[in-house]
Amino acid sequence: MSTAVATAPVTTTRQEVEDLIHAYVQCIDDDRLEEWPDFFADDCLYKVIPRENADLGLPVAVMFCDSKGMLRDRIVALRKANIYAPHFYRHLVSNTRILGEQAGVITAQTNYGVFQTLLDGETRVYNTGKYVDKIVRVNGALRFKEKLCIFDTYRIQTLMVTPI
Image 1 (cartoon, rainbow, N blue to C red):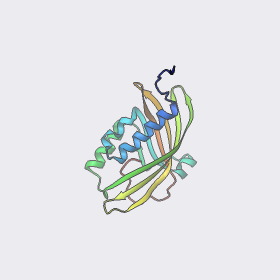
Image 2 (cartoon, rainbow, N blue to C red):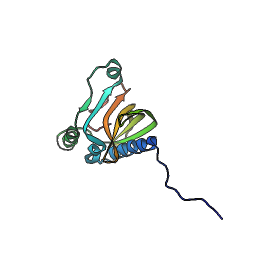
Image 3 (cartoon, rainbow, N blue to C red):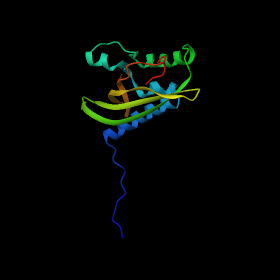
Image 4 (cartoon, rainbow, N blue to C red):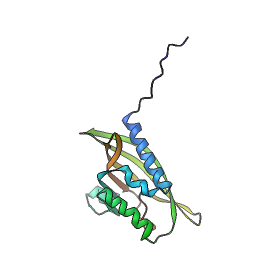
């Protein structure tokens, strides 16, 4: 006769962070972009920045939003105003590391690769780099306070309208 007691699985901070990142990229890959801002705290920063600028401390970013409202505006512009070649993304993410936690802010880094498929069926490596995230709890759920998408790719082949 077994004396084992059923217990709920223990979730680590890293697992929670990975779940957040996986849900984030799946939202983009599934073209549910209206939900994308919900992954962020109201007061947030989102930047897609070249590695060379990040390394030199230069502020110029390819995409910059400093509030959840700006994230929403980004999606409205993408849906209604921007003209671009229709495409789909597929993210691969790996090697999530928790770099620290201080005053309720978790700092994490994750490698990413984004493949882009155009409607003609051509798929190519679109963008690669790392996410450097500052993550906080909002009403018990993890949200991005700051998300830096620092890309290694030296040339962006088409207009970047979709978040990375």
